[in-house]
Length: 67
Image (cartoon, rainbow, N blue to C red):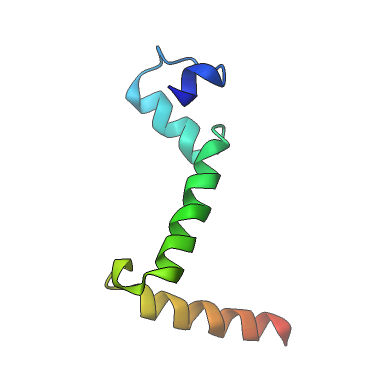
């Protein structure tokens, strides 16, 4: 429903849709990603099995970038 309302061509193939998602031509998906992160922040039991490892790595990279 959102796709049609936003003017997205819903007659495209699934392959084209996925390419558009990858290329971030569908801005609404960014909102979904932000909402997902927020929900996981507030409800840790919803995080995936690799969350702690990714979080630790992101902190390491952030510290490296700060120098």
